[in-house]
Amino acid sequence: MLGPQIAYPSLDTPGGSGDLAYGAYQRGYYLSAFNEALKRARAGTDPAAMTLLGDLYGSGYGVPLDFAKAIEWYRKAAATGSPGALLSLGNLTLAGQGLKKDELAAAKLFREAAEKGNGPAAYNLGLLYLQGRQMPKEPAEAARWFEVAAGKDIEDAQYALAVLLKEGNGVEKDLGQSAKLMASAARLGHITAQVEFAIMQFNGVGMPKDEAAAAAMFRKAALGGNAIAQNRYARLLAVGRGVSQDKAQAAAWHLLAKHRGLGDPMLDEVVAQLPAAERKKAEAQAARWEAGRA
Image 1 (cartoon, helix red, strand yellow):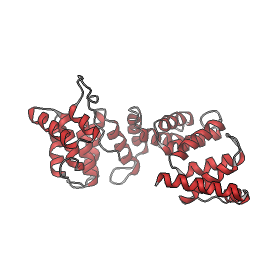
Image 2 (spheres, helix red, strand yellow; image 1 turned 30 degrees about the vertical axis):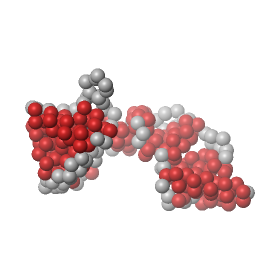
Image 3 (cartoon, helix red, strand yellow; image 1 turned 135 degrees about the vertical axis):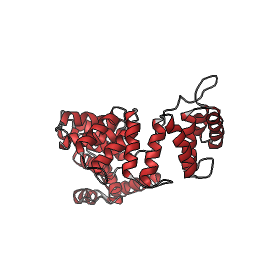
Image 4 (cartoon, one colour; image 1 turned 90 degrees about the vertical axis):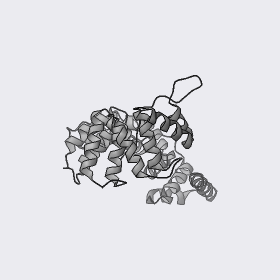
């Protein structure tokens, strides 16, 4: 589930008219954010300030963690129609934090926020329809809400809808549209989408085959720490497909993926066949990478 996604005015700038409370929040000055938001909330109907107060109490930033107070402020903001507050109330209801855990009640709140244009709420609602726990399992309805969220550049929704389109689950199978959505999610930084898009590129699924572009995308996801991408990129380096052959680099990436639990007998052979000096160099490089991520 996606957490609070609040539409605040732009970050405050000298002489500008941005949101001072949220500007302080972004910088980590939580007590200043709280005081500014409280002043505005008490002065009148200010849903952004009320929602920010809910976030601060709900996270324990600048003030003691207090779900009851967070809910109080979220409800005040929701009464004005704030989609962000409705989303937050839905998340708390779904998690049973300060409120009785109730998936159906959470879905109702997500729907209300989604109908007001909130992308994360639309995604959350789609996920509930896809999971089919207390909600009826309806992939078509899930796809409909994922599409709403995808249009708001919610990368998780773009990825989820791309998977449904690729499988023909709840929607007509459309590999071309699946590839477009997967590409968009990948550009937004969704690492799993980067891996899936690279596989589609490499195999020419829903788009022209492009091994070089696939290798570059695998590398990007590998640098992001994805073990599958590290393994696939290592394989491409080992055989020189889409990228210049470099068995020492292949070994380093393989060892990194293996450290994360993804073994590969073929790449074990690549490592074993390296000259001792190159093998040690690859092991040291993998260890440095791993230490750098620790």
